[in-house]
Length: 228
Image 1 (cartoon, rainbow, N blue to C red):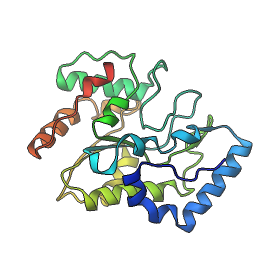
Image 2 (spheres, rainbow, N blue to C red):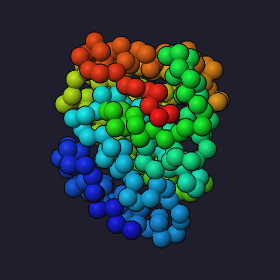
Image 3 (cartoon, rainbow, N blue to C red):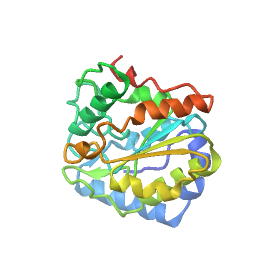
Image 4 (cartoon, rainbow, N blue to C red):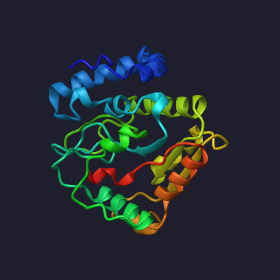
């Protein structure tokens, strides 16, 4: 399986040095061998979906996940999102609950496809862009984190007035990559059922995000678009 980068043009320009690096060549070689022996997610054509759906100059909000869903039919390249018709995972159920409580909405818990967010400028970025079936974290520490860290750093350095939503200890570690004098960083526990009650519920990140965007002269995110 070749993953010769086919990625949205603005991101290709920003990340060209990463694609041409030795570590990325090693990562590609690992993935080629891995796919010979194991089922991996998402499909090759969707590995860079987060970048393809949200060009570099259109990013307004960044939501960071850890790695893709690892069960059949779930992962399609956007963190926390599942394709239409797939059962909504527990963490996303809790995200929807917080949106509803925060914004006074009534988004159903049966809609889990977040493509409409990506199209509005929400970069739905996993730190690791691939995973072995049924084995969470199987592709961690193979090079993806270096690649996605470079994307975060480029956004921090070259853009202004972005919102970074960091949920859980893993994502919160990324705050050192972000210039908080230029951007808003919002941190909370992970929305997983194991931790959401420790402060994700009631964090008001979705209203705070939109308030900041409007202060920066940008249009707010229509979070309810998930249901439309």
